[in-house]
Length: 215
Image (cartoon, rainbow, N blue to C red):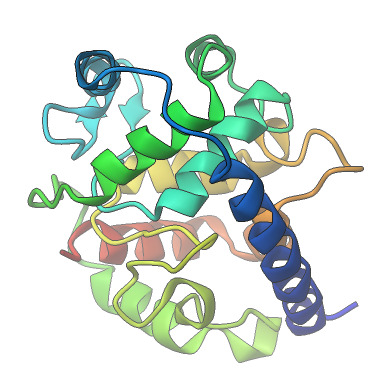
């Protein structure tokens, strides 16, 4: 099946499941205090940066600032259900209730620090071309078709603007080791699986570099 066909099928599935998911998550009242929410936000920032801008330590920690709330909630649930493999984030996420997940996601959505940058700039132009136009000869659609022309995402599709280039590179080159661990319960990330496999190392680095400088 062509990637473009997979993309259309997946988008339809994501839109349907995301609407039901959002309705379920919005049920019930918050059962935590403002102080408890602040404590959770501060805890997240110990790894993801004081403004949620990401952090480079032993491993690149992703930017959460400006991220789409629906995407963040979906990924927290993926960690909890072990559809996404990350032992650290499982331990963080499995103690959160749905209301706290949504509140945390809303808090990070409103943050807008400058990108950390740091990627080589010699391949930024190539990355921009791939992001905007795709790679037709390899049947790779434009990244902008899901993530938006400004790379700020929409609903279940994540913001990529300002994301750490080394984080993007690690995720795309290790896709099957972390994402889609429960084939019976695919989420929006399933759209990226064939695309990640079709991009070569240089193309991934170029796209990651371009995105890392976007505000």
